[in-house]
Image 1: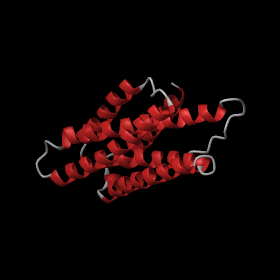
Image 2: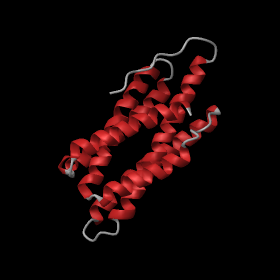
Image 3: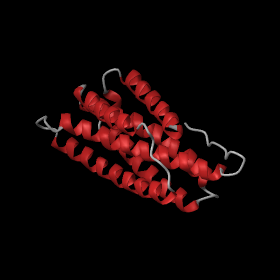
Image 4: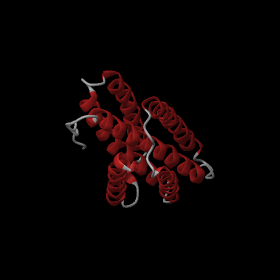
Length: 186
C-alpha cells in the first residue's frame, strides 16, 4: 500500500508535485494499455479463449480512456511525460505477452498484481489531493474503481491459481512499484 507523499515546502512545490502525479499516472496507464495488448496478442490466437480476449479488450479500452485523459491533463498543465515511456510501452507489452504465454491464469495474475499496486497508488493520491484538487481526486477515484473492477475480474477468472502465483505476483508488484518511483521523477 502506498503512503501519501506530503507536499514539499517552497515556491512551486504544489505545481511540481502535481507534475509528478500526472506524469506517473500517465505512465501507468500507458503501461497498462500495452500489458493488455500483449496479453491479447497471445491469448487472442488461442481457440476457446474468445471470452477472455474480449474481457482483456474491454479492460484495455478502460485504460485507453484513462490514458487519453492523462494526455489531456499533461497538455493542460504543461507537464512532460516520463522519459521512460518507450521502455514502459515495450516492458508492458512483454509483461502482458510473457504472462499470457504462461497461460490464461498467469495473465489474470498479472492483472491482479498490477491493479492491486495501482489501487493503493491511486488511493494515496486521492487522499493527498482531496482538499487541494477535489476535481482531480474525483477523477482518480473513478479510475481507481475501474482498476478495482479489473482486479476483481482477474481474481474471479482464477488469477490465484496461476503457476507460482505468490512469486509471480510479488515480482510483478515489485516491478510496478519501481516503475512508479522512476516515472515520478524521470
